[in-house]
Every structure is written in structure tokens, then in C-alpha cells.
Amino acid sequence: VVALSKKEREWNEDAPPPTDIFYDWPYYRSKYFAEKAVFSAGGSLRVASLNPSLLLGPGDVSGASVKAVRLFLEERLPGVPPGGLSFVDVRDVAEAAALALQKGKPGRRYLLGAANMRFTEFYQRLARIAGMEAPRLRMPDFTRKILPFLPAGTLDLPWWLGGELERVDLEMASHFWYIDNRRAREELGWIPRDFNETLRDTVQDLRGGLSGL
Image 1: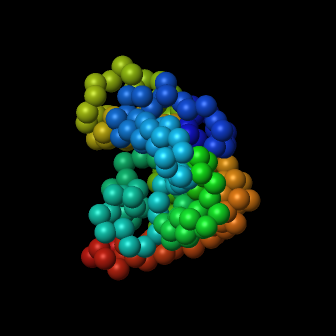
Image 2: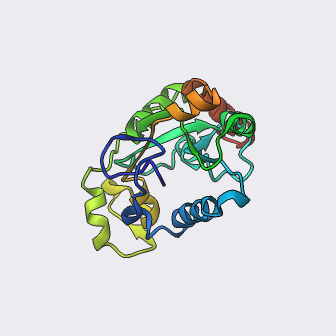
Image 3: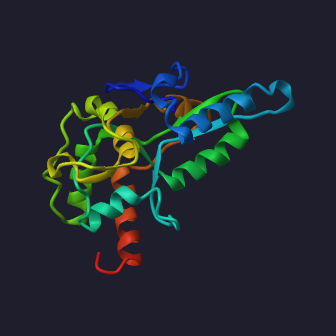
């Protein structure tokens, strides 16, 4: 919730919290206030906060984090959202946690992201790696602007706007979540792997666990 905006730009750990954007998203609001409560505990807790972006890679038992990849492989992706996201390999986040135990500074947060890109570019990369065609349908940039006029819950949108979608998911995917990871690199010595490797391993893992892919 730190690196979040309506326009494309990268944010670092010192960016002002965009509470006006995420306040209506309970899950993300809880993340922000949980971290704030821990940091406000003062000297009683020596805590460094790790803030990873969307986790990809092999081994996602629940399938929640790799849902975007799975829907694409199953050819059930209705359309490409207009926003962008930062992605990171779960194995690199595990490495960052180990590094933070040794080098992390109390009271500091570390943004963990390996690659920032629009969803359009993400699915183009994914298509090349998976040997499939990239989605042809891209939701227009004005999608985010019309969402406040639509009802909450599941939206039955026209096919050219993505079909049946959860409004909150579409709203989040219409924003940009770009990370500047220099603090983690410089203070923790963290080096995330090439993002194409993450995508390859994610695709291979999903195809090994899901029939027909």
C-alpha cells in the first residue's frame, strides 16, 4: 500500500501513504494499520517491515497469488486491466527475510519488487514464455473513472470491458503499484532474480499441477 498511485511512477519507502486510494479496501487498509501499530510500539519491539509486491514462483499451494497466471493459462482471462504492478519471486522474498534478520534496521520498511510493468506487458511476456497468444482485449484507461458509478460486488460488464469481474479487483488493477527497491538492495544486499525466470518457473509449476495446461 506504499507504492500505489493513479499514475505510472515508482515510489520508495518514504512515500506518503495513499490512504485516499486504499481506504475502501479492507484487506489493504489492515496491512497499513498493522504496520503502523507495530512501529508505534517504540523500543519494546525491534521490527523491520518487509513489503513485497505480488508474489509469483513455484509452490503456491492455495493458488491465490498466481491466479493471474493460471487464468491466462486456462484461457479464462477476460481482458487485460489498464493498470500496472510490481512482481517479485517468492524465493527472493524468503532470501530478503533472512537478510533482514541480519542487516535490517529497526523501524525501517523495505519494498521488495523485482519488475514494474503494465499488465499489458506482463501478459505479453507470459504469452511468449508459455507459447500462447497474448490477450487481444485491453480495458481502456478510463475504466477506473467509471467504477465509482458501478455497484459493489460482482460486475457483469460488456465483453469489451472484461466480462464478469469483482469490482474491487478491477479497481485495484486499474491503479499502478510500482516499487523502487534500492533500499533493499543497498541496505540488505538483496538481489532479485531475472523476472523471466520467475515466470518460466511459475508456468512450469502450474502446468505440472493442473491437467490440460
